[in-house]
Amino acid sequence: MADNRFTTHAELFDLSGKRALVTGGTRGIGMMVARGLLQAGARVVVSSRKADACAQAQRLLSEFGDVRAIPADLSRHDECLRLADLVGADSERLDILVNNAGAMWREPLETFPDEAWDAVLDLNLKSPFWLVRALLPALRRAGTADDPARVVNVGSIAAIHVADSPNYSYASSKAALHQLTRVLARELGPQHVTVNAVAPGVFPSQMMAATIDAVGDTIAAKAPLRRLGRDDDMAGVAVFLASRAGAYLTGSIVPVDGGIATTASGT
Image 1: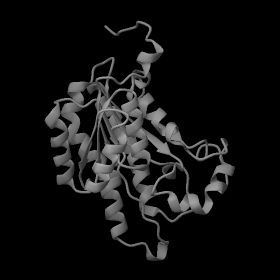
Image 2: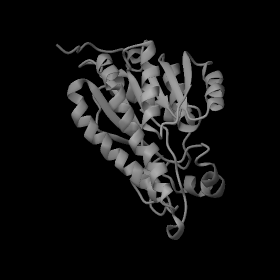
Image 3: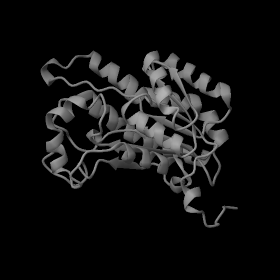
Image 4: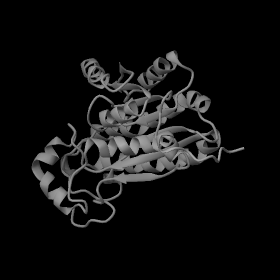
C-alpha cells in the first residue's frame, strides 16, 4: 500500500543515502547538478573525459559531500560500459543517473562536416541510451513504487525553439533526446524508474562562454525573467527531480530558461 502520510519539507528534498552518477559533472551544468545533489545528501560520482578535470572537480566538490570522479570518454560504447561497471563496483544499486555529458558543433550549413554529426550524436544521444541500458539493473534495485529510481537527461531549449546559431547536429540530438526520454519513461515506469529531462537555457559554462560574451546581455533582456541562468537554478531543479518532491513525475521535459523558449519571441 502506498505511503500517504504527510511528508515534511525537509524530507521532500532530502537525498541522504542516495547514490548518483552525473556525467559531464566536472564543469558547467553538470557541476551545478552534482553540487546540488551533494548538498541534498547524495553520494555522487562525476565523470569527464579528461583525468585532470576529474581530479580538479573532485577537489572542488568534496567541500559539499562525498564525491568521486572517474575519467571516461562516453562517446564510446565500451567506455560507457566501463563506467557502469566502476559505478556498480561500490554498490549494486544506483538511485539517480544524470546524463549531462554533451558536445556542440557550430558551423555554417555550407561547410558543416560529416564528423559533426557522428561526434555530437554519439555523445548527446547514444551515450545516454547506452548508460541507461547498462545501469538499468542497478536502477531497478534502487527503485520502489513510492520512491522510484531517477534518470534525468539534460536536453536543451535548442530542441524546443530554433536558435540563431548554426548548431544542426546539436539541436537535432537534443530533440531526439527529449523523445528518447518520453519513450524510456513509458517503458521503465512500471519498473519503478522515472525518466525526465531538463532543457536548460543559457547558463555560464565553457560551451556557452562565447555566446554569453557576444550576446548574453541581449538574451537576458529578451527573457521574461530578464536574466540568464544561475548555478542554483540548475541545482534546484535537479534536486526536485531526484527527490521525493518529484517522485510522481515522468516523461516530462522541464525548460529551465527563464521563459526564453516557451514564451519569448525574437530570441
